[in-house]
Image (cartoon, rainbow, N blue to C red; front, side, top):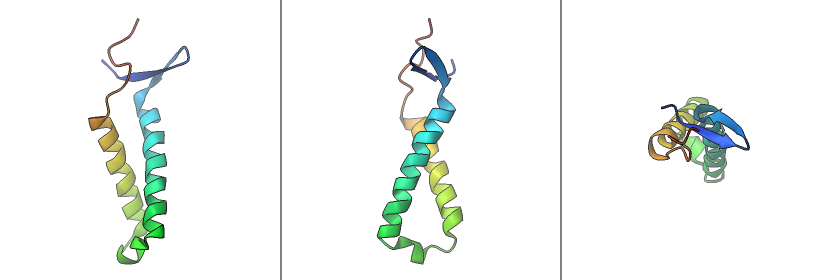
Length: 73
């Protein structure tokens, strides 16, 4: 069954919700790495940020279960 979230009375697909959560976490990680001055050791920061976003999104999908999976009316 396709996992989804129940927001109010609307079922929302899990992919956009997980993507927004991953984007927020990736932005927080970017800010932390900027403060720690880690980007001076990274050759291509844009590619690194993109890969970080994809890894965070994949980790959310694999390790965090959808709260309403299997609970369709």
